[in-house]
Length: 115
Ligand SMILES: [Zn+2]
Image 1: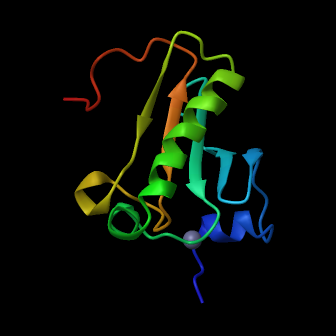
Image 2: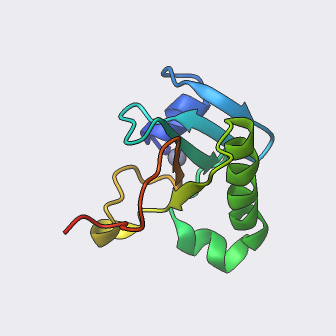
């Protein structure tokens, strides 16, 4: 039984603020937003990380990005947005359920990592 927090939100066991859902992809608000718009785009089914999809389900990996783009447009991010996937220990992954951070609503600048 997989017990990560995103699976629980997707199952409705704990609250989450959903902004989009279809059969394969769900988008929720990050509870600690780091930009005016900070959403998490993730598979509905439990997927631990990129490797799982890179090997077996490129369709879903592509759909996460395509969905992020459509949701960004729906959120009015006409000037752009940033997508980030934190993978593994050095990538800073905190929840073991693949998710794409969608950030926008202000100029984020070219730097991705603070010095
Ligand atoms: Zn999960």
